Amino acid sequence: MIVMKIKYFTQLFLTNLFIVLATSATIAILMTHFLSNYVYEGKVDELKRFGSAMAKELKKTDNTISIETVEKYQTLLNAKDATIILFDSEKRFRYAQPGVSFQIDSQEWENLKNGNQVSVPFEDTRFNRTVSFVLTPITNNNGTFAGGILLMSPVSETQKAIALLRNNVIIASGASLLIALVLSYMFSRFQVNRITKLQRATQSITSGDFDVQLNSKDRDEIGDLANDFDKMASSLKQSNEEVALQERRRRQFTVDVSHELRTPLTTISGVSDALATNVIPLEDAEESIRLIQTESKRLIRLVNENIDYERIRTNQVTLKKETFQLQELFEIVKDSLAFAADKKGDQITVDVSEKIMLHADYDRMTQVLINIVKNSIQFTDNGTVALRGYNTSHHTVIEVEDTGIGIKQEDIEEIWERFYKADISRTNTKYGESGIGLSIVKQLIAFHDGTVEVKSEEGSGTCFIIKLPLLTV
Image (cartoon, rainbow, N blue to C red):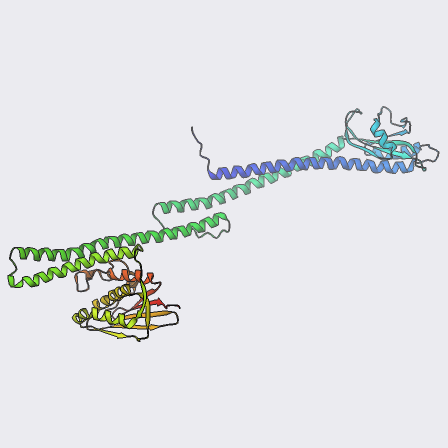
């Protein structure tokens, strides 16, 4: 079965054309019908007026009818091609032009006797020609029925007037149809052009160009569709950029993880082979074993951090909140990292009141602060890492500020990404840690319904600011 494809423009134009044709035909028919009735009724009304005027003059107390009055009216009606027939109460003709005859049916006669006018706009059965006629009763001054007047006019002249009106209606309808066709074509083309723009924009999106924008100012459904399309294109562009960014990070993540694993594994493998083949003297074996232990712990830490990160990311962590002194937490973190700070020539300071209490998961907050302080120590040489804590009206605020090398502004939002390094070259330098700790930090703070932000300038140190909600009683 072959299905013919009809373009939308053709469908729209033909639909409008059909509507215009149907409307024009309906209007023409109704107008012609209305005008025909109007002309016929106008003719009948005119005959009624003449009939009523004649009936008033023909009233005689002696039940006689004035022929002279009838002839006077006939002279007036000759100009209108109308004919008068006069008859008495016994249906006898009292006045009629030669060759004219007329039969009144019983219903019409009863209406006349009851004093009612009888009008027929169109009659073609009782005359030799088609006519309009009016029957008007004549009554004496005492109200008795004296006869009637028949005023009859041929419809030929009326039909000429109707034909002229019909022709005018047809001409007007044709002119309206022509104008409607032009406007329909312009409107259809306009609508199709708008849809074509949407189609081209959709093709651009399909081909991977997400920069397309329609910027429609129309206030109809197609305009709303165009605006929704712009929002969709912007969203797709953002998503595409995010996918591209994540793909770059995935590749970098693979490189970083490979390097993080390869370095300790290479060390362990090399030292183990050296020990097994007695390349390393016995007196140096103890140092080699410590190196193997250090690198093994590094591998374990890396694996644990990844496992921990995935558990946190997938909401598999349950917080056990309790209330404790923030100063105690700071001292624990300071003692835990004192050796690492000494190796870098750094000093860890604590500035917090004993009254400042924190409601949180003790172990997880310890993990958060250790990760942040380790990060600060990593990028600070012969400087200071300050731990500060205080309360505001709604939060407990923790600040970790160092005097290290700082972070570039364009890198601040990226430091929370897994395995992200502000300087990729640091992988092979003294700054080459895994970079996963800050990702864990942000997730854990979010679990505590808190926020963490970073303020930093390159070369002027970095400050991490954590805000956790106060315990409400």
